[in-house]
Length: 124
Image 1 (cartoon, helix red, strand yellow):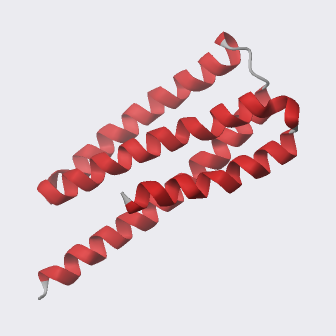
Image 2: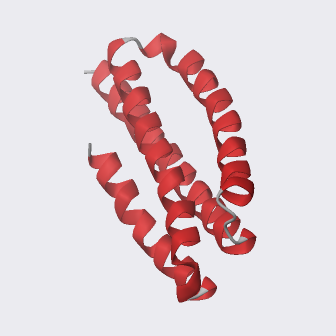
């Protein structure tokens, strides 16, 4: 849960910078653009952490399935946001991309910590 709290905390400056760049009129776009990757990243992290704890050998297949899900999900989110909700393109896509990149970098860091923790305890 420490990783989820950290990813949530990392999303706040992403939201603020995107909002400051896009302007007050784009609050909805920026908020949806940051919250969507945050929810997906937190859900994905919980799933990866549980899988690694219970069955470490299954982690790769879970990550591949999650990648496929994210590919379809984010494509649908962009289509829904731009066509269905008529959100402004630049603030929505820009904040979504920024949050996606920051949160995936955080996930990579937390995975490396998880692997190091596991390998460190295996040698004891």
